[in-house]
Image 1 (spheres, rainbow, N blue to C red):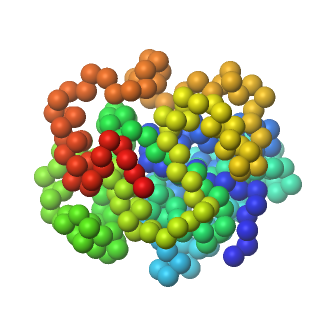
Image 2: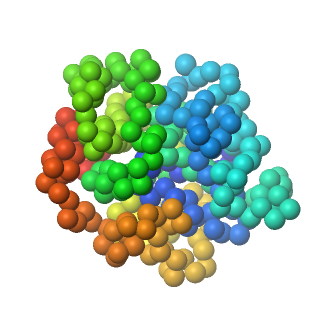
Length: 282
C-alpha cells in the first residue's frame, strides 16, 4: 500500500481533545485539516466507516475506496472543510498542502487498520473518562447514546463476551451516563483487545500530559515532521473551537469537579466492569 508521507491521523473519542490537538497542528500555514470525514449524518459516505471495526481481512471495497478518497483529499463538504482555508477552494489544490491532518472521533475501532494498511502515523489521544463522559453528557449529541453500530458487529460482541463476560442485554436498562461509559470503554479499552498486534505507527498520548507539558507537543512535532506554530506558546492554553461553553476547560480547571455521587458511581461501575483502573489503558 502506498505510503502517505504527508499525512497524520488524529483519533480519539468525542470530547477527548481531538479538535484541540488537530487544530493546534493544522493551523500551520498550508496544513490541510479534514474534519471528521466519518460522520454518518454530516457526510455522504461517512456511514461506511463510522463506528466500524475494520481489518484487512474484513475490509469492504467501498470502505477502501472511501478511505483512499479521504487520504487523497478527494472529498469535500462544509463539515469536513470547516477549519480550512476555502478561498478559491485552495484546500483542494493538490500542490498547496504541505501536510494533511485527518481528525476522527468515530474511527477508534479502525485506527490500527488505518495506520498499518495505509502506512500513516496515528496519534490516538485519550482523556480521563470521567471528564469525557460528563462532557459528552453536556453536549447531548444523539449519536453518542446509540450503540447499535457496535451491537451489529460480531467481532466486538465476541470480545465483550469472551473477555468481559458481557452481554448486550445488560445495556438495555443502562442510564445515559452508563451508556456513555460503555461507549468510552469500547473506544478506548476494548479496541486494544480487538487489535492485539503491535503497531509502531500508532502512538497513544494522554490529553492531560499534552496540555500540561508543551515540550511533549514539541517532541511529537519532531517525531512526526510537523512544524509547530511560531506563536504556539500563546495559543497552547486556549480551548479548541469545539469546546463546550460550560466546559471546565474554559473555567480554567480541567479536572472533574462537583460530580454528583450518582454520576460518579455510574461511571465507575462500568469502568470497573471493563477493568479500567485509575485511567489505565494499554
